[in-house]
Image (cartoon, rainbow, N blue to C red; front, side, top):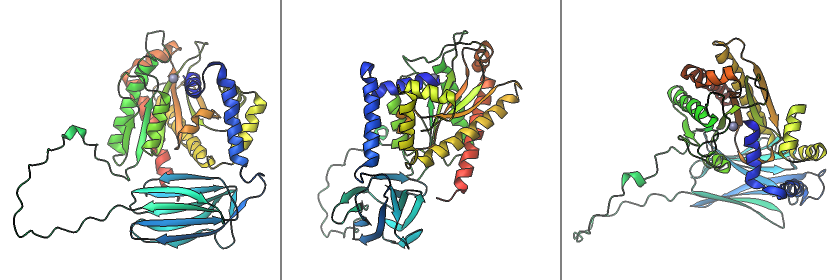
Length: 413
Ligand SMILES: [Zn+2]
């Protein structure tokens, strides 16, 4: 159920009567965050210079601007990159699309570009780093990125002339406590079967529970990805009937720097005749009246407050992720309907929509929520129970994902 996931996500940050105040506070914080310290939205800061200094174990990158500004730091994989987005900023002349060749042990190159209007992006193409930190300094104002490298391997020991007394052998670490092997650059897809454990989700007239059917479909989808896209690592937010808080689900995706977050749910309606599949993506903008209505209600805001929030958020660097989420949602919905209509020509295509749910700001990658059918509809509840129908659903979601991944692989970043 899309409504209840949004509602419970909201509950995760705001409880009871304090909710309205909390939401206003969030809107206010975002507003202040956006306007200060420049004070006025109309005057962009100028990025005047980007320079670097290589030491034996560290590299410092310095971005000099003509005043304080807000910035956001992100990391991308495959290939490994670290970037900083300077908000409400523009490049000094001569800096557009400049590339600085570094080629030390940690950074291959630094690229500077006006990413889109009002946002300057500085990308570091990484080699191998251990840690990094990003901070600002004053007079002149500058953003500093410090990268620490991995320690070089110690030189081989010289053969001792006299043999040392043997020390007792070190205990071997049990295999089970070792972290699973993982390639740092292996791209990851997170599948999120909704609900679980004490939270059954929607209920069908045939006794089928949402938490059960979404896990079954998620498992088939995982098999399809493993078989046809072996270069991707697949993580499930749950693989059994357990309760997982929503904040942990998004954190898992962010911590693993997933490429894509796919949440699978079933729908419910008071009108038993309603059926079909629909896909949601997370947007700051409610394009339709229905999305506006749902978002305003779930965020507990009036329509006026909502449009104010939209205006503030629209130009932030989130735009890219939302566009990507909308593309993923479109591809998934199309493939899902195509896959299902092979079995049932009358399956209603309820389409794709986005809505500004504040709490969904948490995922940092293209993210969608697929509603695979209405458990409250007798026909669909019966279909959802069938293995062959679950396979067709998973196949459709997989085809959409595959289309999206092959398109975004062609896009240069
Ligand atoms: Zn649900």
